[in-house]
Length: 172
Image 1 (cartoon, rainbow, N blue to C red):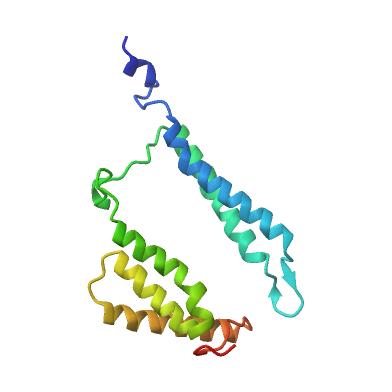
Image 2 (cartoon, rainbow, N blue to C red; image 1 turned 90 degrees about the vertical axis):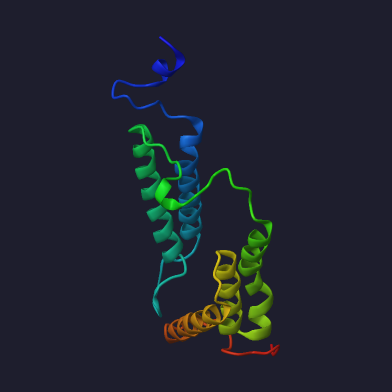
């Protein structure tokens, strides 16, 4: 009997490895942190109905459910590996320019929202991230980003959530 035979259970599936537990653990930790943060904020308020703790609590509970499902799958012998249909090449090097564009898109709202307002800042972030993911149509990205961010700004304003002025251009 060799080492591979020992690692396989009766159904022919291999025993879980440490790497198989990373994804369920990450989902569980993120879910637990969100639930913890949600308990520190009021879940419901009289004026708006839902309080600021409701969404972190809901997302956290959802992530805990996902983590439980992933644990079950690992115990059943599932391996979380890239599949052919995903087009992922695990051996490919990281594209630092694309990683930089994605990071700029994630962090740009910190600088742009106070200076430009929510819609323009979000449009820029959307365009940078779309480019990082390989989009070759920056004008179309700007249009879609602008439409989505304007719609989000109007929807949140209608719900009573203040995202700042529509366009601020440096005014505070």
